[in-house]
Image 1 (cartoon, one colour):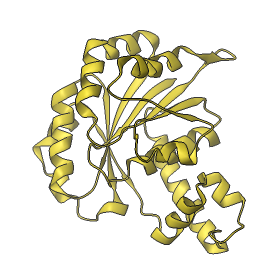
Image 2 (image 1 turned 30 degrees about the vertical axis):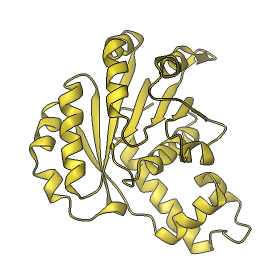
Image 3 (image 1 turned 120 degrees about the vertical axis):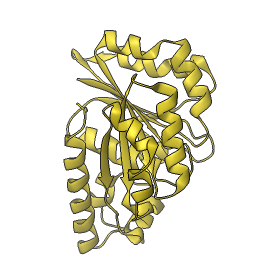
Length: 234
């Protein structure tokens, strides 16, 4: 199975790039082929940590967005690859135009590619409103994965009880939680510009993870991978 994964949430600071990074590490550890695209012109955080797998793409250029679909046509040893797109904030409108004009869902269905729209949410009202806009925009076209990021909030009752969530569930949305990783550990990984694998396996330098920090990161990855295993991924 091959999947096209748009990692969004439309607002900044909800943890989109963290989800893109850990999904990339999941594919690597599962020996699943993938290509990543980073739409953030300012920070390119996905590329920082997985530069061998990710490339920049300009979200308001059809020619560049078409590279996403082209990657899904590329196979290696007869195996199709998946794609991860780390969406920057405020990219919903140009992406929606491209999806509609390209009849993307029909094209991907013909190719046997599962399209997943990931909505990364904190516990604020903006995340609720943006989920509603996402579902209004795409309807029954893609799969929806609503991620309650416990690193960005603890009370998601506003989201859970919202009309936006009810509509998403009508379209078969999967609702999952991303556990909180200790902030100090994440800061060390970020300062190293390291993948999760590199941070765990090269414990050297000023920002090296300590013994118990590495164990906590391993536990967090395992729980996250268990969550990914429940989703339509390779």
